Length: 339
Image (cartoon, rainbow, N blue to C red; front, side, top):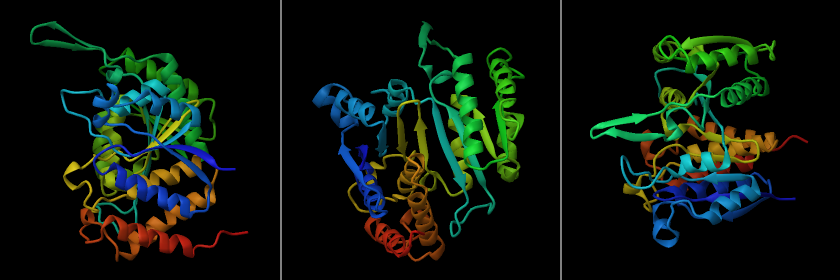
């Protein structure tokens, strides 16, 4: 029986990288029934929103989506489709692994992190208003309910992925009530997982230690804005946003995506690097319990990067999207699934 997955190509290079990921996932032999649905700025004229109701309804029905990048205007225009999806589908947990890939030149060769970010509140609640002309007030919301479920998710993820320690990252020395509540909840949740070590770290010290000694950390969990920043920092440690997968997970739905931009300047030129979305597709397979297929995808990406013959231009090579995908497929097809 096939898994039903909503495929959202997005815009810019989105259609190219989603097609690449789809091709690789299909080659694993896992049966997937893809339902393609639109999203992006070009949908506003058609239906008045960058996130059509038909797309939202399809994801709710399938419970799974693989999404390409979508352009978000800065400081004007429509609201981020990513934020709208997280809110509408209550995708409360952002799961971002960052692991060193052999063959990718970076400052460190031993990074192996998981960043867990609360997705639905904090400053990203979008509660802003103009107090008087020239003065804007934004509200940062932290609740016990959201704190409990993201912290429990982090400990469960640590256990599931064989990790040893969860670090709750905060700024409770200044934000004593909101981050104080987050730490209070973290302390309680940690007692439910005696097999997982638990500690805390102030956000600024965490950022400094990450760029000096990233091996000091294992799983880090934090509120929305801090997680947004630190997850990108962690990606930078392993080569950038084009190297890291991402998943937004809720109780009933999960959306897997690349978190890099839509790169409209190279759209349609066959130059896009589909690696992050391919790896995100691997995360989706693992989410479905298809671990052997997920391992094939991961191992094929690692092999091609380590071999170094088919590098996309963002990593100093000359390979186009199709050539890179072909290299992935050649290795993937050579793998034999153990009986």
